[in-house]
Image (cartoon, rainbow, N blue to C red; front, top):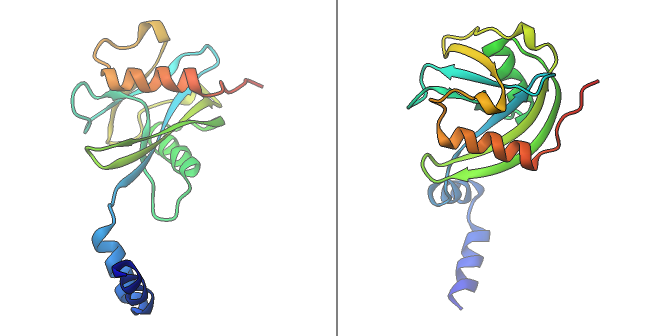
Length: 160
């Protein structure tokens, strides 16, 4: 009975009231896109981020802009931060984080011209291409797991 009454009230409420109700009671979270970017030798691109807690080393990525598609966001972030354009982009997996409240969309990608990679943003201290068995010792365990999971679960982009 109570559900029926609440349903009638909800459906009869002005659109503005319903939007406010959804905004007030539904969870909010950030959405980011990240990429495990490989070169033609199978090395992975890692960035030493200025603002990242811990070691700073990690995969490239960033927040989506309003209305931006995730693949477009990762292409934009890579170009802005490193000058690298992507030849292939394959969705590897999506995960949610409780703290911070965030949804991460992770891609497995192939760089078009890895030699063009250079730190172009104030956010990036340095960058490098690393063999999987020679990742920086300071690289956090979470970043290592992201790389392993993307390589294990995602289809490896082919080179043409």
